[in-house]
Amino acid sequence: MKKILALLSFVLLFIACSEDKDDNILPGPTNANISFTFSHDWDGTTINSTNLQTEIVTNEHGEKMSMARIRYLISRLELVNENGDAYLFDGYKFTDLQDESTYNFTPVNNNIPTGNYSLKFIWGFNETDNIDGAYLDLNSASWNWPAMLGGGYHFLQFDGQYNVDTTAPSPFNFHNGTARVSDGVFEQNFAEINLSTPITITNNATIEVKMNFAEFFKNPNTWDLNVLDTPLMPNYDAQKMMQENVVSVFSIGNITQ
Amino acid sequence: MKFNFTYLLLFGFVFFSACEKDDEDNGYVNRPTPAPLEIPQIFSDNILDPVIPIDNPQTVEGIALGKKLFFDPLLSSNNTQSCAHCHLPQNAFSDIPRFSIGVDGVPGNRNSMPLFNLAWNYDENFFWDGRVFSLEHQALEPVINPVEMHNTWEVVIQRLQQHPEYPNMFTSAFGNGPITKEKATKAIAQFERTLISANSKFDRYLLGLTNLTPEEENGLNVFMDEERGDCFHCHGNPNNPLWTDNAFHNNGLDATFSDLGLGEVTGDPADNGKFRSPSLRNLAFTAPYMHDGRFFTLDDVINHYSEGLQDSPTIDPLMKKVNEGGVQLSDQDKADLKAFLLSLSDPSFINNPDFQNQ
Image (cartoon, rainbow over all chains, first blue to last red):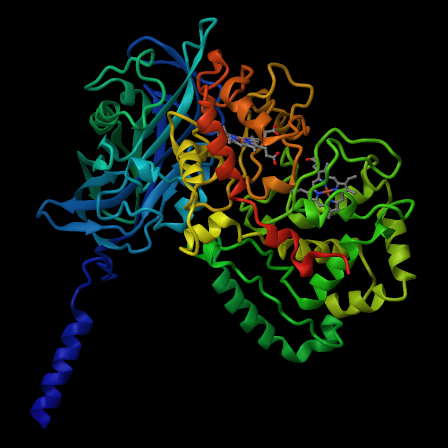
């Protein structure tokens, strides 16, 4: 009997102390809380809610363009240390450039050991997460991707006008999400973003993630809006080019701690 | 900021029970009976909880008072016009004329707006141009608007105080103390929040209770197809059954603006000609359409998006092929789009006995 009790309490203790993969909550002086702040620019010109609708920018292909609306989604932010230990933060980040309160992301589960890390995350949702209609806040923001194109959610909505220096400006709708191969056949279209810049965490820290929108039109595919302006959602090749171009959009900025 | 209604409710309970003994302090003889909104499944399954201000919980007595006020011409200067004069239940709480006529016989410059699912306007920007924050503040405005009820709140309060029923109703809803315009508008807002429409044919289709016709189904595809209607970026989708984004856009009605809309409110020229997207629910009852009621039929509206777009510096980029006037829908697609739009109308809403003046 005593043996069983001892065993039982040992098991209980063990369960209670086993580390939750998601939590990583072991408070102590060697641990830190992490939050993220996203800043946005066009080749060095800061873009925020004040100048989004007024700034005229030039894309790599040479068209002058204006921006009306930029919203995007990223998910599964993860810090990976030198030993390969990964600390995954729950939740996803939906940003609306018009609303600066959405620029910051403070994960609910937090507190990681101090040390050296690099950051990775998913552009949009991966296949597991991209479930049609599953997220009430994103539905309320009308962020859905049409069922006829595979459903789930937009990753990016970037709307504006190009050739704004001419007498005939035209609209573009640079929207990214699941790619439709053919009727009823769809291909996932998220991107894994790996930022190799080392991040040294010595204390509670805010990590700045920078986003250069010009890269969407630059690298590796130089985007010609005269050919690809709208509609792009049902255009498989356009969707795949966006998936390639997003990889160079992000970089690590300041670490404040 | 989104907030969680369940926590609010929980907090409310704790708060209420903690205060149970202080009846006299709050001036209540009998505490009003909580009447939380019944959230339709089609909403709770898909979208965030409604916005209920923490200082104006829904109560049986508050809603009853708000309803009486809403239908009472006493609010207007010459006792002839109630809110319902321009917001009729049979028109989904909109009205028929292009411009509503105020008590002095003077028309305004905007089409009356239908009233439903107002608690799901998460940003709480009301009117076509979003100039008023919150329903409570909105209700202050029509009473004093010179082209609407053209009254003063002082006169309204006097009339309410001298009325045989109102003083007791205010006490039951808000406790002792004087009748104020804040209490009156809180009550009206409570009533307005009960105006929920979530039982259209399309709602029942989403719940698996009925089928769409082939025409309605194609119409939905036109609505969702970026190559055809592309309506869903502004007007909701099957996962957002509000059928509006409640955001501000210039949908290409005019090349120059006599009414600046949001631009008048923010002072920012980049906002000129922008108005709040209306919900596409209950279009069968809410003609004419647009902020100035310029279109009398849904065909006119669809033709506008298909080939009638007017370019201007603030036109929304989602208005495609504006140089050709629009996306040029085929006659079949137009007819089917209309059939789909009409499947979003909810006859049980306009016939709901709780919403009639009785």
